[in-house]
Length: 115
Image (cartoon, rainbow, N blue to C red; front, top):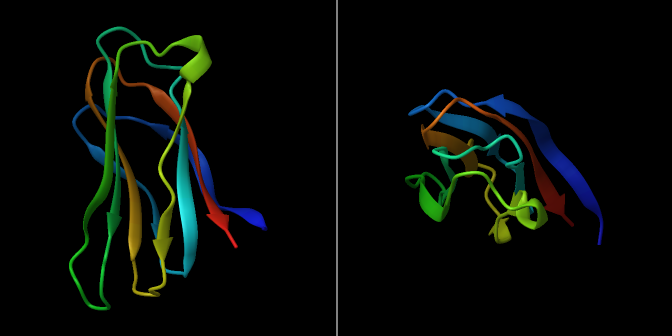
């Protein structure tokens, strides 16, 4: 199975703003990976993956995870469940990050595609 980076970067979170990391409009199976090493006590971050079920449909949350405070050394990188997509609609999948509390942190991230 080939694995490629569909997108990557570092998101500096603005507290209370939901940041779109990547919109996907290709078929495949994807996972989101986020490094939470910059989180400290009082920080809360949320990750969401949105999906359109049918062509022309409405984008809705299919995956949600939230993490609070400084993360343990053995669990710094968070990985989503695999999400499969066969659509080519703009934003068939959308990967987002939202820091809801604390001091703005930097979050290195990548979305991998499995084929």
